[in-house]
Amino acid sequence: MLVFTRKRHEAIMIGDGVEIRVLRVGRDGVRLGVTAPPQVAVHRREIYEQIREENRIAARAVGSADAIAAELRGRLSTAASDAPASDPGDDAH
Amino acid sequence: MIAPDQAACVEPRRIETPVGTFEIDPQSVIHFHEGLPGFESTRAFVLLSSPAIAPLHLLHHVSGPAASFLAIDPRLVLPGYRAVLSAADERRLGAGDRTALVWLALVTLDPEQGPTVNLRAPIVINPDRMIGFQTMPHNSLYPLRHPLALR
Image (cartoon, rainbow over all chains, first blue to last red; front, side, top):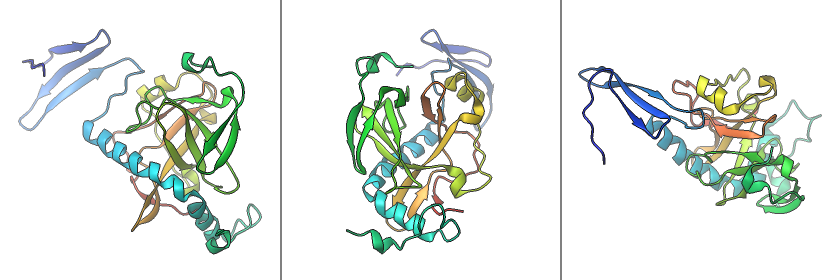
């Protein structure tokens, strides 16, 4: 890991497009400003990891697609003209 | 628009998915330049619909490592749902009619909680450019797991 000492208003560059600048240094945290090209997504790491974990769980739901959809439609009582409401059990093969 | 890695594939082709076989043409391929968190190497998807899974859709990989998700229009789950695009999101989406954007919330099936949808980090697709990505708003008040029920 590269380690830098930066003072307020000083920055580091990553490649030729990403700049991370120290805006403020407080007792509990450091405020950073990130400038990056539009194709580079910038996120707080803990949020990214939370979404990543949720996506991994979501990828397992596909096997239950028919059951989830049938239950959803079954709960629909007012949109009967859209799609026939059915008991989830009706779709079992 | 067809990305270089898709250029070789110009004929319609059949793909097998957990919800059936679909014929897809190259124009229907949506490019996720960074994949999705957890599936960063899967860069090309199609959005599939079938009566068996309606009103859900299937967001299914067409190249790269396998990745397949159930998705639903978040406004069917929560009327008045308003997703927010950051300035960086706007640039990533590129030009195009903003009223035509397609929003999708991914479905998770928790054994105890039942099906839920991720309203915190919805997927947005620009159909004018066939570009999509998962938004991660910094200050979203929407939950990661909202009960899946139609309203």
